[in-house]
Amino acid sequence: MTAQTANARDERDSPAGPGSYLLIESKGNWAGPTAGAFLRDAVVLAEAGHRVRVFLVEDGVFSAVGTAVAEIERLAALGAEVLVDDFSAAQRALGATTLSPHASLVGMDVIAAALAEDDCRGVWH
Image (cartoon, rainbow, N blue to C red; front, side, top):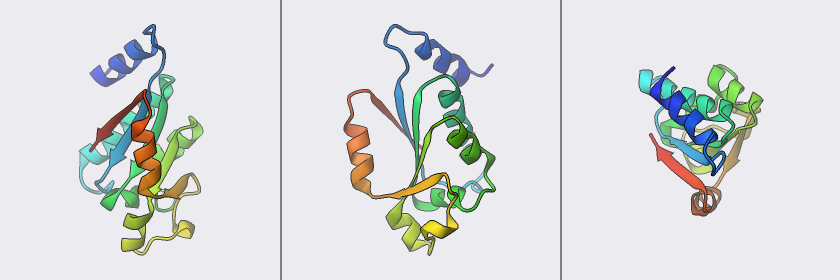
């Protein structure tokens, strides 16, 4: 068990209950092992019962293209939200039809509102 998995389980079992996480990924899934690890961390949190939203921004939007990234599929199966920055997608000529059916294009107003929620923990990679 990784330290991250243990921490997620400890938080799930805490009196405060499951937390809410907004994980912001700015690197493409091809950027090295840490990019994929960040999405796997999101899966671990979702499996532990936490509310998880992954926001893909800058080159991170490429992780939501098509259906090739297993972590995106797993997050969707666990009920996590996969959000894609509409501006970053447009800058890379990606439209809604090229994205995974599990991803939603959103503006920064959605992310700002999520980060302002009392129980939201934001993590940027």
